[in-house]
Amino acid sequence: MSSVKYNTANVDGFGIFYREAGRKGAPKLLLLHGFPSAGHMFRDLIPLLADDFHIIAPDLPGFGQSDMPPRDKFTYTFDNIAGVIERFTEVIGFDRFAVYVFDYGAPTGFRLTKRHPERITAIISQNGNAYEEGLSDGWNPIRAYWQEPSQANRDALRAFLKPETTRWQYTHGVADPTTVSPDGMNLDNFYLARAGADDVQLDLFGDYKSNVALYPKFQDYFRTHKPPTLAVWGKNDPFFLPGGAEAFKRDNPAAIVRFFDTGHFALETHARAIAQTIREFLLRAIGANRAA
Image 1 (cartoon, rainbow, N blue to C red):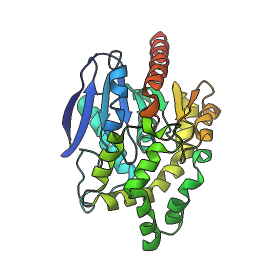
Image 2 (cartoon, helix red, strand yellow):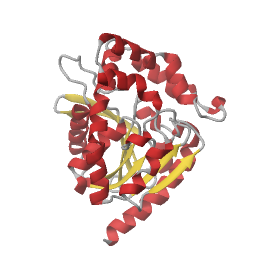
Image 3 (cartoon, rainbow, N blue to C red):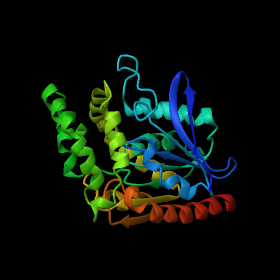
C-alpha cells in the first residue's frame, strides 16, 4: 500500500497544503473537498486508490491547513479559489488528470474543466452539484442572502457554522450514526473556530450564487466535451438531491450514476464501495482514452 505524504506548495506566494500518494507516472487523480471540510475527508479513500493512481488532495484556500489570508488581502470567491487551485495544479505538474469533486469542490473543479477541457481525463462527482434540480430547500436561507445581502440575512447563516450543524451534516441520512467517526467533524469544527473563519465562510455562502449562475456553462461543457463522468451520490443528502446526480445523464448520456444509502459525507460510511466503483470506472475511462 502506498504511503501518504504531506506537503505545502508555494502557489504565487499562497501556501496550499496537500496530501499525495501513489506512484508518479500513474494516472493522475485530483481530489477536491467541500464545506466545511478539507483534504482530511479523503483519509479513508486515498489508501484504497493509491496503488493504481497518483493522487493529490489539496486543502482549498481558507480551508484546513492551507493559507487563510485576511479578507482585505484575498477576496473569498469561488472564481478566486478556482484560480489558486488551477495554478496549484500547474505548480505540482498535474497537467492531465481525473478530478473528484465534492460539494464546494464541484464549482471549483468544474471551473477548471470548463477552462481547460484538454487537461481532464474524467470527472467523478460525489454529491457535487451542477443542476438546479439538485438544490434542496435546505438552501433557502442562503438563497435569501443572495436576494437580499443584509446583515440580518448574513447573521442568520451563522447557524450553518455551529458544531452541532457540522455533526448533523455528517450523520443526517446515515442508517447508523455510530458508524461515523468523530475525527472528521471535530477537525472541521476546529478549523471553523479559527479567528476570521466565520466571515470567510459567510462570504462564500454569499458567492455561491455565482456557481448557480454558471450551471448552464458547466452543462454546456458536459454536453460538448462529454468527459467520462461518474456520479457517486449519498442519496439521503439534505442539500444535494438525487435529481442532481441523474441530471448529468441529460447532457452526457454515457454518464454513470450510482446511489449509496447514506448522507452528504458518503465517504464516512461507504469509502470502500465508492473506491471500488471509482477504480473500475477510471480504469475503463483511461483505457478508452488511450484507445482514442
